[in-house]
Length: 502
Image (tube, rainbow, N blue to C red; front, side, top):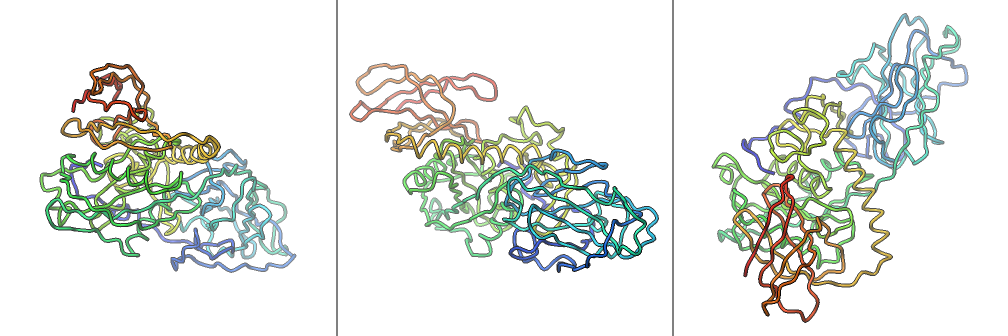
């Protein structure tokens, strides 16, 4: 991504001052969401209240919301409703129960959450206050660990007190079964490729320690609508060409990583992310006052070649956020409208704001609607419901395309490639693959070494942060090499003619 002020703020730096309330968890593989042992949360053991329990008096459930990155209302003002944001089956979640408190005269209150046919969890409520959005301690909170919420499951909440102190039936103290319409997703698989940068003779390799890889895994898990995230360390990749702050050389390295992925036997749903240090520090690299921090293809669910991106690997959160942003482009996402000119025209919220409450489901931190969506250039960042839903659509489409591809038995094709990057066109080595390359289908006029001119179809994959993309034209075995390619490409709503000559 291109930034003009390279000091990026962590979401935590602008966090509301929040107090962590007591969390209950449904026992499966541990208490914290995603089975992450973060040491936080209050009472987590199942309470055995006995048979003599009845509706709690003086309290009404106003709202129930499920958080898997962004808030999704499923119960509001006494009635269940369709989720305001899609809910992902098997993914960790936090359920917040918002209550209105009147005159509570009965005994101690116990909150009960039921998920599907699983055993319910009962949590003692030590302090009961009218809930507010920004205060996580004012709501009754439950962690749902990974793997528990299945497709077709409903959830339900009850507030109970001892029968001998209950004023009687209180319809407002229970929700009944709520159909959360949980949808299927899958595991997000990312292979981190450390790139040894030799252009300046330094041979620098970024940090890929276990702690660093875990920081990537956790941020992807917090944000992406996946059931889990697997981060794998790939082999070191040597690179001897310059990659500059202004975008020069980025496109060539990106396509080289795409080649590596294509020849590696990577899975259909596997993303390659290359990290490198073009200078000794981000301050030195971005010394002109702005810089390119990452580059990726704007992806296509059926095209494995587009599942590649690169970014700086300097120490700190900036590099990890850049990875989350670039892989977002690989999921077909355009920029959110803050600090950019080529923004997604369909983004629904002004200024690139998320416009909904978000939550870090591992650390139980809330992010207000004024935060900026991660696909823009502004900070502080979280994810909007619009981008979250688009990511989920893409991930579901990957599964559908994988089934079609495995059944098709496509032939291996050889493609001539030209990258139109920051400093003009450059012919790349040809690519042989039996996988669809995807992208925009464009008309291409070619001239081969014999001087013959042909009108053919080509595929154009757009880059996300620099103007241009890579043009791929299939060539049959034994045909003369292409000498000139001229394509009509629509970019930012404008048709342009791109031409490259050897």
